[in-house]
Image (cartoon, rainbow, N blue to C red; front, side, top):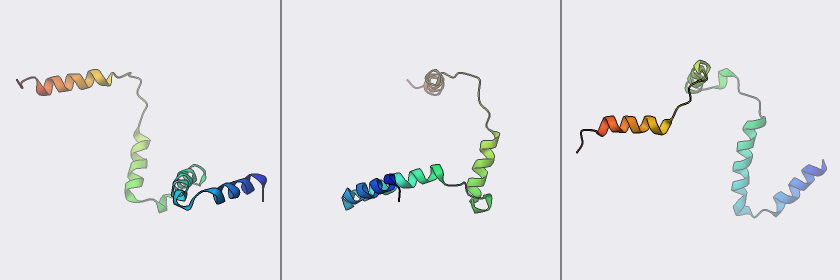
Length: 82
């Protein structure tokens, strides 16, 4: 066992049991960073559809001012309320 793994075991033993859930959640999140991607046969229909949509995305060369766009939409929608 490597020194780093030994250190991890020691630290794990020192964590109170009621706090372990936080560590487990972090480890679950990290697992997605190093695990191999699932085969397409293992994906749900929704996941396959999402991947297909992602393939259509193109980067936009337009810088958008979202606050200005929102103000225009709200102004048009609520201009007759008075």
